[in-house]
Amino acid sequence: MLSLDVLGPGGHYRSRRQETIRDLFGNQVATLSLAPSLYITRAIKALRRAPALSVDARIAAFAQAGRAFATQSIAGLTPEEYQHTVSTVTGIPITVVRNATDEIARAAERIHHTVENARPAAAVGSWRDPRAQGGAAVWTRRGEVFAVHAAGNHPAVHQGWFDALALGYRVAVRPSRREPFTPHRLITALREAGFGDEGIAFLPTDHHVADDILRHADLGMVYGGADVVGKYAGDGRILPQGPGRSKILITAETEWEPIVDTIVESISSGGGVGCVNATGVLVEGDPSPVAAAIAERLAALPSLPATDERAVLPVMPVGPARRWDGALRQRAAGTKAWLGGDGIADDLGDGSAVLRPAVHQLDSPFAEQLGMELGFPCAWVAPWDRDAGIRPLRDTLVLTAVTTDEDLIDALVAEPTIANVYVGDHPTPWMEHGLPHDGYLAEFLMRTKTIRR
Image 1 (tube, one colour):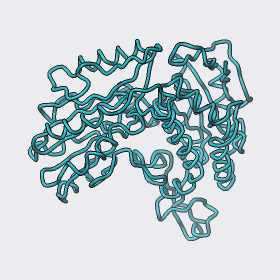
Image 2 (cartoon, rainbow, N blue to C red; image 1 turned 60 degrees about the vertical axis):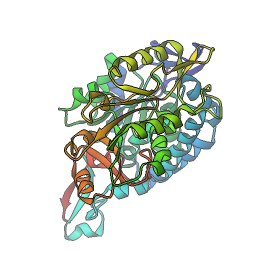
Image 3 (cartoon, one colour; image 1 turned 180 degrees about the vertical axis):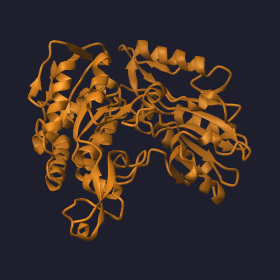
């Protein structure tokens, strides 16, 4: 049994209230300490009082922590033991967890590049910069403590708060109780690399105490569904991170057959659990051939235990998997099922089930199902035409637009609710360190001030 303690300003804290974390088969894997409200209040105050490290020290600590996270034993676990634990608890394929480990390490090593890219070109990083002598814009924090309600759908989601720590914020992370192993390992590595006990905190809580972390911090970021986005939409201190609803658009003057592999990769890579995985495919013309081709490719993916090296699909306990199956059937009523109509829960016979891909065809680009995002490869294929315009494409994290229509591309790039536009044969999960994911986080964390010395 692993013990995941609270990691606060005073070091490790093992609370009276603990939660047992089990694997896919019901076996106890770890106990997670839950921090009480008073502890949270004191921890955030201590973070606020702590001085920020220098820029050079922060960048060096990130690089050291990234290497340790991917290659060294941390908190008693080797990288291989950590990856196996995450896979057996969450059902994320082991190769996906392994790739995420390397991705996190690379993000840590390149964090200076990322935050520098986000800084306005005319701004300097410090009032001490010689350019401030005659007057200059200085890039400065909007607060001192940044809080995160983290997601547990994918280990790499924890890159999302790196910018805050690199920019000098002290950071408090409330982990998902589904997958606290990645943030515990990562925060331990960062503390040991130089951020110390008062630079970053690991603060597991229950739902009753969770908002205390946000209330006492200066700024915060929250992951969740549409309900979470709605709850915090009016709070300028909180940055909600909701469903991705990533999509692919194929216009009539382009050929879709050569990009079937890209479409399938967009839907299923990484187990299909990410916000950048495509859930909507809109086709100008008849979408049936596209839906049929996607379904044929996705049907060939194997059903395997999450820890199998060949596994590519997510796994969960049989009971929850069957509930997901029931929910999908209910929401898909009235659509044409090309794949998954007979069920998506494939029982492995050991108490767990693979979540198989699903492909459904819609009658309209305005069908409500197009906004439905699930934690496995699930695609909704719909017709699209010029009269529909960009309305069905709004509220999209990544849009791959397979088109040569430059006026349409102009409209998609200009649409405020489309975060990223990939023109041509590019999978929606493509990302590059240093480029914005849903805008640069620094756009929320920082501001410019005019300084003249």
